[in-house]
Length: 298
Length: 304
Image 1: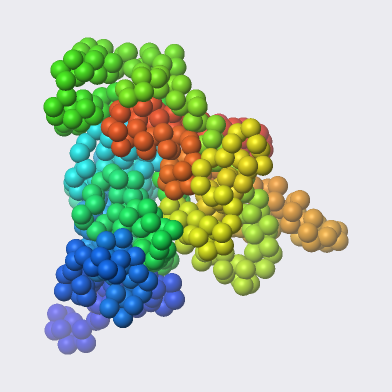
Image 2: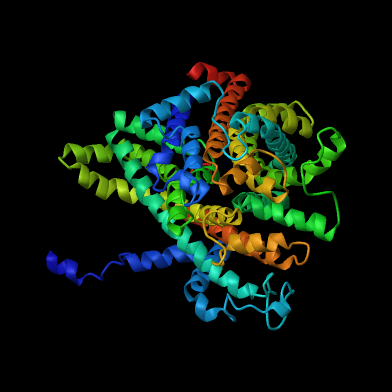
């Protein structure tokens, strides 16, 4: 018997690697998926290699050529101090991801923990967690950030923490709903009756099923985090001027908008491309992973 | 439930001073402020009472409409808010009205030809535009209108006594905010319409020979709208948040500019008051949307 099995050709089991490859193939099957993936990859590569890729130093002043349009030396033009806009925007990509990525990840972890607790334990724990999530969601993320940053200094970490808290409700809610739905399934009930403990139920059944909606939501919340973070920097909160955050570049350019539209124009283009790219990627992921989200952005 | 949420928000805002590291008074007045001034600030911000007493004072004060004093101008926060609120409300409601006005025909037209070019453009744009930050859209509109077209007096609030002037200043900010939600609302209304259009009574209406526009605009729309009304509460809350950026960009007076100025000056009483108000408005908007939904859709009344 065992010899027969060994002789049979090895069945093609989809390992993690081929699974990932398959996922990629399905994402790029639609134009929006291609666009989203390209934007995401370019952004990450630029963020990682910004100091190498940038044609100029992002702090180098060239007062004689300030507020100029695109030229062969400065491909996107220069800002009010004659600094190269392209280089500043490239380093800005790094700043944006350095804040948005940890913020969203922290939001996922906290949201997952709260959602699991609420969905699995139920009862009063559930009620308390739901009210807290409702309270956080009862004002827009920007307003929450304003209230907290008015009391804090403006370090990068403060922004990360505030954003993480603002994103917890969306992750927590999705987790809680999926946990409740999965627990009600007959096969999970059957396994519990066979003596499976909570760790096994959560690890084997709940987590794998919660993951797809969380992945989609992460892709959707990442551009929101970038948008809020740059917006706060634009308002003078969060990342401060010497750092070429997109919000800082935008605010510098906005002050001189009548002299040169280029800084504002390019920064807006980069912000729009980034948010569009990640959102389309998220949409595509949702279709591919076949997730139904009813979440409305906070 | 709504009241419980508001209560938690207010307790949280009263406690925030103590949860976060750092001293709000030194942050506001600088490290080398006059001790007498520090004492005055501590007294006005009620920092000398015990922590539970502070929370209690803030809550009872807020219920009576007393949100403390703005430290720099020494005017009551509630007075500042009452002065700023109408401008923001007008902005938010105008843009919401514009968004709905644009969304209805867009939704009907794209639902009428599912998979047509309008439907496909709407499908892509609605997802895209809502993800773009509001200030980017505002900025681009500002560039387009003032810098290149030399159009409209774009900056400022306009005078309240001259309605035409006020309107002219309202156009661009309201348009920036409306664009964000028009596509999204249209998209949602479209899927609701498609669901309704597949039902039997629509086929019956067609069989009776009713004009196609009447079927779409009268019969189907009436049953599709409730699913979107619930979202308008969320939209209004979101608009209040986005309005902060739009007001700052177009230097328009309002709750957003008030909050922004208070934040840059670290004037916590005003920030706290403004945030409480936005939370109240947000909860209220959701409550109203819920009530409106029940008024439109009798089936919801019986369920609960």
